[in-house]
Length: 64
Image 1 (tube, one colour):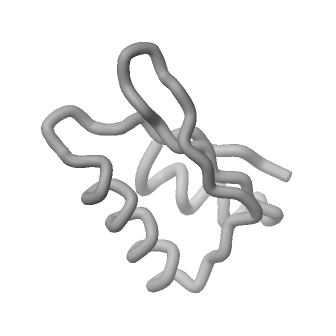
Image 2 (cartoon, one colour; image 1 turned 135 degrees about the vertical axis):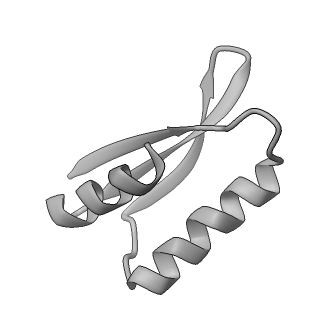
Image 3 (cartoon, helix red, strand yellow; image 1 turned 120 degrees about the vertical axis):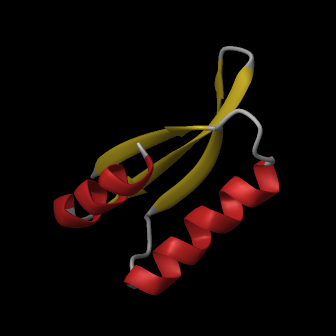
């Protein structure tokens, strides 16, 4: 299982970030094994786990 961590961008709401991630996953037909918020200093991030290395790489190229 491969994990990709995404930091919440400054100036974009949490809802917008989650929506962008979910929309991209749906368009690509990728289903993460886990999708959870994580504390990253004073900001929030997301940790997504993927069963496929290819899926993790594609997601990382887009969001990490």
